[in-house]
Image (cartoon, rainbow, N blue to C red; front, side):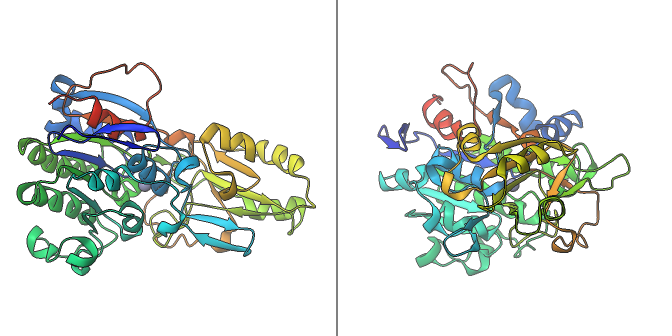
Length: 407
Ligand SMILES: [Zn+2]
């Protein structure tokens, strides 16, 4: 195959060798580094010699959906429209879940490659991403979470549990991500898709710091499957949707700034609405707490005064107005509030204490969302050609894997 496709202004060569793009959810680079140091990640270790090891910037907010969509469209949220799990629809006066594919404004490289004749497979851990990643895709697309429900008509594959040889994993488990890799290896051994996208879940990274036994076991597991894909002749590119950091003090107590509570107390209860786009149907492991919030300021309130007051709060790294945020973070103006607030590495932003259920947090809080989780790995099992001196993004990975590698 030597065909080229153009998607969202960039051209991509259709793969000549089976190409696997892996998004390791919440993969702070230190996880890989310390797993390699511990001697449990020989595939990753081998990349410094025979592959390419780079660092890229993810999209801010450093959340799962905006970054997964950026990776598969090769474009920032200003192009594809997905800038969080939620936005506030001012017309209907409601917080709207953005998991539905109708909010996606751009075609994916996956769907366009399939339309041009490539066989394409997408496997996600959580089902929340499946509809977005599989938008208009003629191919295989299913989630580990609902692998038992996959049908030929809907997902392009059936009998997934039997094919993979694993039971249906729990949505809160390391097994959910292992299932993604096991299914990916099975597909590579059988269907051998031209292009495959594997996306895991950050359940382990939310609970386990880099270098700990739980983290190293998880990276050793992924390393074993990546070795198999490598041995099957696949070109492999690995990146992350975002990093992950402890959000606590020295005794593991969460540093939470309850911004809605503070705003109500300082400026009155009608001054504005704090929206946390990390909120999603699966919050037990982070309590919907992250380092990014957007504030919808009421028309009668003084947005500049609110902005300056928030910027002076301890734990706040940055407050931007809408225009600045759209420019700096390449966000869609109609899906963010009047202010964008980013907290420092050790701090998360909440709304009010009563709206965060922290009972599921059985270990000290680790989370993401801010600039402090922006650096992610960009790894390949081949040498990449081309100029690599400028700023690299995680959503350059398809371009690099498809255009920059001669296998
Ligand atoms: Zn994530």
